[in-house]
Length: 141
Image 1 (tube, rainbow, N blue to C red):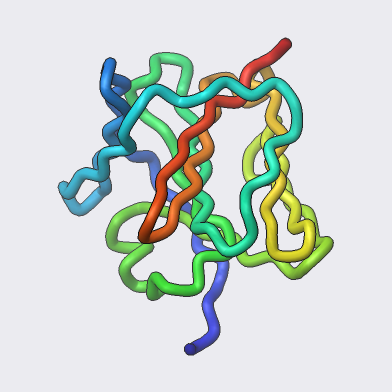
Image 2: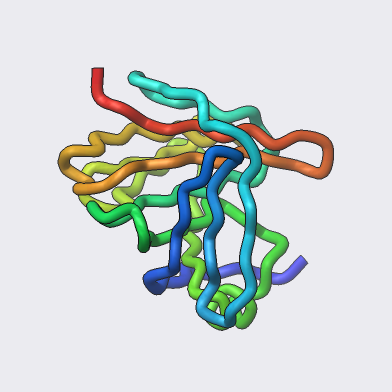
């Protein structure tokens, strides 16, 4: 497995539907995150080993920025072509993805804290592997 780098994200199209969330990549392809996200008011701790993605929408909820956290499978070129960003963190390392959105590694699990008011949009977290997909929305109490 080759080394992976941090990649800056681009603005992507977003559509919130009754059945889930559609993200349109800059290359025209779309990803669909199924289901209504579970609301989370505290720190979200994902399961170790899952692919974690954080989406922050703009106030209109029609655009957003998508970041992968510690994704070692996707080549830098693919992320740059699609507009998806990536941050690579070591265990116990923490980083601000966006104003109001912090991620940190707790061993091999990702923890996400978010203040949607500071982020000025909605904050979604997707946790998935080849067997399961979960979605969450970080909300204020």
